[in-house]
Length: 480
Image (cartoon, rainbow, N blue to C red; front, side):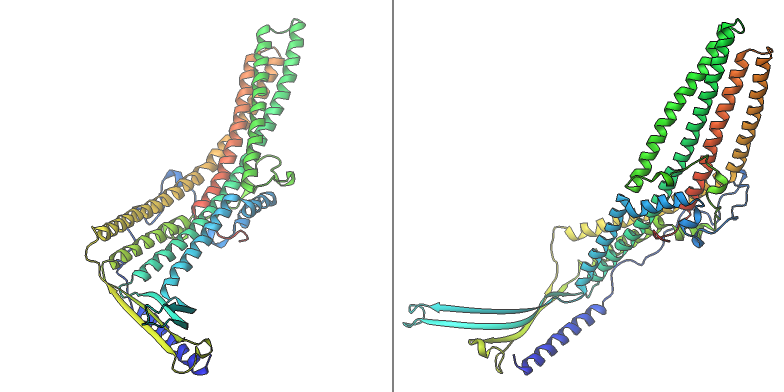
């Protein structure tokens, strides 16, 4: 290949590419100007008796990571397992990678497709075709060509690229949202297992005590002290406690199965909850912040807005389809009947084929496509507004729970203390022959119910702190 030909072909290719990119860069889009939709949310969180405590006390979510949120190392280890192994999270990450690849494919439309081609042919023609003398023709060619390339005068390519970019960003935020939900779901499962283990321990302890009481009452009955009614009443408490033991044994097994599903592998026993759920040491307190800050932080709201922007861009692409399409096709190279002379002087060849196409009649297809894109944009607006309003409601609900659960928990603790005192007095009066065993049974059942409700309230308070972290927008990254 001669140096002259290399220089000529390189210069021609460079000029053609530069001209195409400059023409593309000069274009604008026909997409409507994006405007953030109005939403029916107030600038402040609700106020009232349910929000009596200071909602601005605590730590700002944006200033901590999920590891700072939890105080126990065991639950941190389990959440780390879920973030590393969860199958649904892996699919979510792959969806982001797929959207990124699609974005790269769409961006390729900005640039011309250039290829180098080499060809050779040999053709023999009979004498009947060549006036009595057969001939054999040989031809070799080498070209650098520009495939059919559309000049984006009306912004169709740019609009499609904007749509692909915002779809990718929406998918990325959806992955963040799923990761946040996974952290919360794993914490819920861990704390639920902790609470059910506490309920099981309470039921087992109650069963043991009631069985001891039943044995004592049966002995008293055989000695002529007490009645058969006392025996039967004591037996009802034993069987009730036995049923609860079976029920909570089942729930503990199911809780562990749910936790193992989230982590995609069995959780080591050393990282499972031990002892009674203590809401005072489970998690740190969080600050509510302003509604505007929360809505800017939440990934599901961001994802909905990116989807709206993508739908907005697609309107521009649909509008651009009504306008003329200008495409360029060209090539530059060499042709010769001798392979050894292919790139010598005088063998230069080139083609340049500009084309303009204007839609005249398509049966209403273009208009229908534009109508669809406008309707999709309206749907995206509604979805965005719903995402914002749902976010506001979820935070408000969590703040209402935060404002009342401390009082409820203290009342439940007081109820347990009072019930324990009543049970102790009733048992003493029965043993002294003052009251029947029915009074002991009633007091014992009240104490057992109050203890179970105390465990449930502790779980509710701890779970609400997890919920508050989730609805306030959380933080990103498996290691963040």
